Length: 243
Image (cartoon, rainbow, N blue to C red; front, side, top):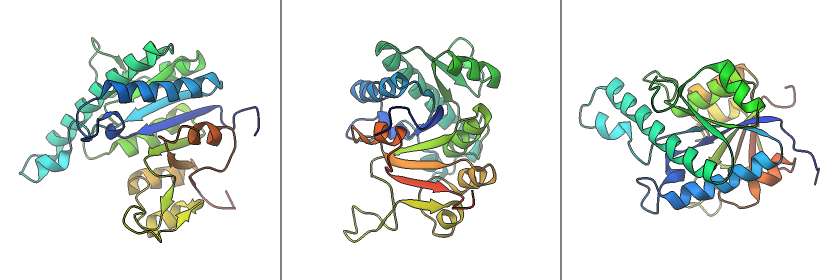
């Protein structure tokens, strides 16, 4: 295994459920501490790390939309949920000994820094972890899209999509024992097959800017570190052999 990491700067996309307990809801401090330990392992390799986190453990806009809620209102509630998750994660990471900053797309200066691209890059250069909260700051865009956008803004070399499975399959491996795992995919294949990697806006954004997406099992204790050191782990989504 190579001694030097494959990437210099990465963006890790976490779902809100990554922080939840067994019921999939709320914030479990033990899960936050588990994530913090994995974050510390990444930082100790010398990789600069930014994180975007969702809010599905606290609020799902679909719940409100099903009852007639205004879409923008539901989305703003989700953005606020990501700030709560970001603060919980920041606290756990700092207790693990890693300096961390939260930047929000919606200004709330008494809680976190406003998102400023150059300041975020400076934090990364100083070895701090940066957590981007508040999505893009706009309704109608998911945190997947926020992850793709922020990754390109800070010059990340890859978006790592943290999941509970070891890559992308042609069907749900929990329901279909014959599901086939993809080692590599192109952006077009991912869109055409409607594979649940990230939403179509995020994938299209990555495709236009040739930003690779790596999907792996974040809860495998070794998968992330092995991938960052160059091993073929999970599923890599790129533009194909011509990229």
